[in-house]
Picture 1 (tube, rainbow, N blue to C red):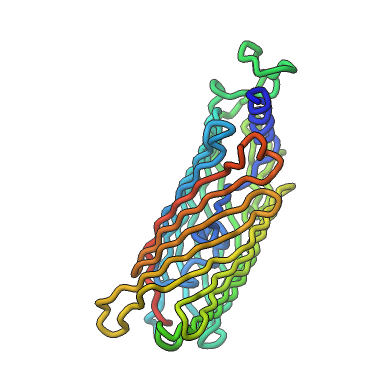
Picture 2 (tube, rainbow, N blue to C red):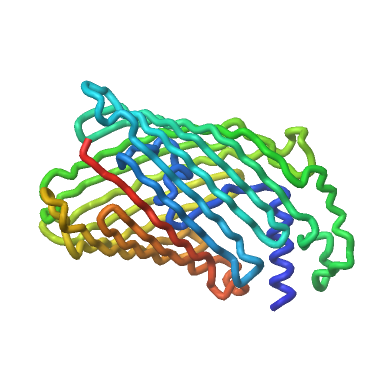
Length: 338
């Protein structure tokens, strides 16, 4: 079993050299600017989210990813406006495996949401960002060090890494349709919300190689599409929040589908603001051919805390013992009628 684990780690790390994919979160809707740049300011007046993910603890040194997402609606108070501008900042740090392949990215997002009707908008978002990657060659385990039976550290790795760190400029764009009907009292639970989006990341296909800077190895564009909704069951405390998310980057495809079941324990006071709304949500999603994901959300007033865990169901499950990744996030959000 140990030999199998070592071999899989070697294969995974070797594949990083050939073709890299972007990070992914199981609670993808709570890293909105990694999903679509047009989501900046689309559903909130202001929000900040910090997230952390740890995965593959049972197979190799854990892959650790941390992210921060901030959005603000810029011109909500402007009179006779035909649309809303949104501004967003997205940062993440990712550390992968024993070679410590580290990625840092900071993106600036700008969006405009044209008001189609009082309850609907059509948005365009763009982003530009700065990325930096580095790799440590000392602790890595390479395919060239596999002697046919096991990993052998005495075998030279033979890796010609000319640029152990490099940086690049990145750019992308997205489209988004939103519908929001939150009229009525909270206890009536008539909420109906819908988001449909499509985005392309890495439109300029920046250099993606530790070996050469000749531009022959470039980061593949990532295509991201999704639809999610909020459906309140009228005159009950129950709300469903279904979602479908599809992403493709090179040969890698991710299809995530599922729903949350939300129960409102305490509604907020509309006029006095003294009572703070409290709800609990349970989610069950699947990343097709990869994992089953259990999710838990706690909403209290303007705060949300979320937890999720991936149960690995792919061919790697015999080594991972069905253990995938753990995630946690904390959000502060201000949502106001527009």
